[in-house]
Amino acid sequence: MSGRRAAPSRSWEVFRALTVAELRDTRDLSVSGLVKWMLEPLSYMLIYFVLLASILNRARPNFMLYLLTALVPFRFFTGVTGSSMSVVTRFSQVLANVPVPKGILPPVVLATEGANFLVAIVMTIVPFTFIYGVDIWPSILWFPVVVGVLLVLTAGPAYIATVFGLYFADLRGVVQNLLRGGFFLSTALIPIRAIPGDQLPRLINANPLSGVFDSFRAVFVNGEAPRAIDLLYPLGVGLFLLLVGAVLFRWRQRHFPKEV
Amino acid sequence: MAEPVVSLRDVGIRFRFSRRSRHGRHRLFSRKRKPFWGLRHATLDVERGEALGLVGPNGAGKTTLLRTVSGIYEADEGEVEVRGRIGPLLSVTAGLMPRLSGWQNISLLATLLGLPSSRMGELGERIAEFSGLGEFLDAEVRTYSAGMRARLGFSVATFVEPDVLVLDEVLAVGDEEFRRKSAGVIRDFLDSGRTVMVASHELDRLEEMCTRIIWMDHGSIREAGEPAAILERYREARAAAPPEPERPGGRGRRAAPGL
Image (tube, rainbow over all chains, first blue to last red; front, side, top):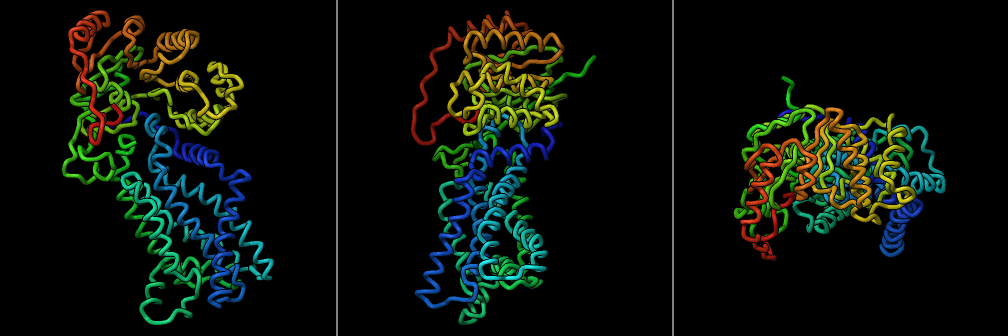
C-alpha cells in the first residue's frame, strides 16, 4: 500500500482556495449570479402562488412567505446535490494535476451553495417578513440551529452525489426529478393537517424535508421556536445519510483522478 | 548515506475500464471490466540533487509514475515514500481553471501546492514577472495558448519552492525564450541540491539535463542508468520497432485514461 507522502497544503487553505475559485468560476456572487438567486425562488413562488391561491383556492395566511420558506431551503438542497454530481468533473484539471484532499470537494459545494442560500434568504424571505409584518424576534435566534440541521441533512447527499455523479452522470435529470418528487411529498405547499387520508400524511411526515420547511416557517412565518421533532428527525436522517456518504466516499475517492 | 527523496517499492497502479462502454458505471459494475496496470513492479530511488529523465513510448507509464510520485494517484500495491514538497507540472493545463484569470490561478495553484497565503503577495509578483504574461494575467486562462498556460504552470510550480520538481512533457510547448528561461531555472534548481524528475520525448535535451535516465515500457521500468548509454539503446530500439498500429476508434477501444 501507499506510504506517507509529502503533505498537501493545509486543508483549510485548500478549502478556502477552492471555494473562492468555485465562486469566481460560477460567477454566483456577481450581480447576475445574485439576481439569479433572487429571481429563481421568486419565480417559483409566483407560479405556486397563482396555482394554489387563485386556481385551487388553497391560499394560507402570509402565503408568499409560506412558499418561500420551503422554496429557498429546497433550492439549497437541490443545488448542493446537483452541483455535487458534477464537482469531480468541474475540478478534473485540478484533481489530475495537483494533489488535493478529495474529501474537501463536497464541503466546497456546501460552502458555495451556502453563500448563495444566505444571500437568497436576505433578498427574498427577510423582505417578505417585513411586508407581512411578522415579528421574527426572538425566533430568529433559532435560525442558526435550523440552518445547521439543513446543512447536516444536505451534507450526506452531497458526498453520495459526488460519487454517484461521477459514474452516473447521465442520470442527473432523473435525480433532479426524484428530488422534485420529494418536494411535492412534503409540507412545502400545503400543511400536513390539510392533507386528507392516513397514508399520505404519514409519507409526508417521513420526509425529513418537511421538518426543515416547518422549522423555517416557525421562525419566519409564525415567529416562534421550531418543534423539537422538526429539528431532531431531519438531524437523525442527516447523520445517517452522512455516515452512508462518508463510507461510500472513502471507498471511491482514491479513484477520482483516474476517472477524470 | 542520505535517504532518497523519492522511494518506490514494487509499486502498481491499476486502472479499470470496460470493453463495452465508456460510461463510468460500467467501470464500476461491468463484469467485462478489465484491470489494466498502468504501472507495475516499479522500484526506484531518486536521490536529492538528481535530475532523473523518463523516456518511453506513449502509454509506457511515464505519466502514471509521475502522478504517483506527485501524490495524485494512490498506489494499488507497493509503497511510495516522498520526503519533501512536490512541484508538479503534469500537463499543459497544469491544474489551471479556465474561467479564472491568470492572477486568480496563481493564487489557487500556489495554495494547492502548499504556499502559505502569508507569502502569496511576495511570491505572486515574482511568479507573474517570471511568467512574462504581463497584462494577460488579468485575462481568463481559457483564452491562453498552450505555451502561455505552460509558462504560468511552470512559474507557479517552481516558485513555490518544491524539493522535487516533476515535469511531464510540458517544456516543449513554450517558445524559445521560455525554454531558455526554464532551462536556467532547472539548472539553478539542481545547483541548489534539489531534485527534478522529467518525462520527455526530447531525447537530446534529456541527455543534456539529466544525471540518470529510466526507460519505461508497458508500465514497467525496463532499464535505468547513465543517460548516454540508455538513450542510445532506446534510440536503437525505437528505430528498429515497427510503427505503432493506430488504435481503432469506437466504443471501448479508447486508450486507458491518464497514460
